[in-house]
Length: 287
Image 1: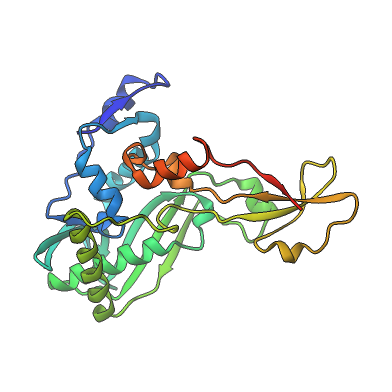
Image 2: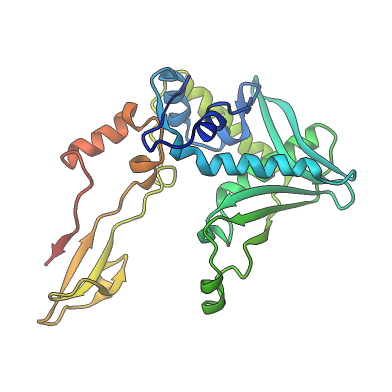
């Protein structure tokens, strides 16, 4: 069981709300775990009693749960928060959708998220298509998928200034439909990967699963603090003039650094830290 800390002295009511998470996935693996890294899931299982999380890191998830509670007010022509099950490769897969409109057969998932995801997210596409497949396995037809994104960091001033910025604090994002055949093949592949990891096969996280930012190069003016130009390929910056220089900004594994509960138990991450002397490498000048 996860141990919770309260290093920022948040109110007791918030602490209790975070600790009393009612989520119960059921089955051998949930949709959210299925699309996540097998290594993270296995480490979480092995070290379940050693994981410590500060309640401040769970506030946005708590607000997401509040949105789901509000969905219970949906009309009578909808199915709300229904959990579905299906057997895949000997495992029971479970998944719960937020809302299914019975009239137009639209499955909606509500996300409290950041504006930088206003154009969508590949994990959302995977999640909703798997939920659609689960619905099909349970005799429920789904014809349209959508994310209802509630932007926690939305600003009216930025919307006024920037036409490409979300113009409202809520956006409906269409999700592309996979074929049911493609979805099933994807699910079977993921289940097999998790089964192999759980059986002891070493399964390092991919760069995508680690939210790797990628190394970039910045053209700087000597004595300046802001980049004149940034590129993924140093050749794109050309040859610096006498009053310029190029700085290498090493890529960082953002999830491993700040968003992974099992990083302390992960040999992949600990090996990376050891190579860097215990911290991410600083930006360096490039000749």
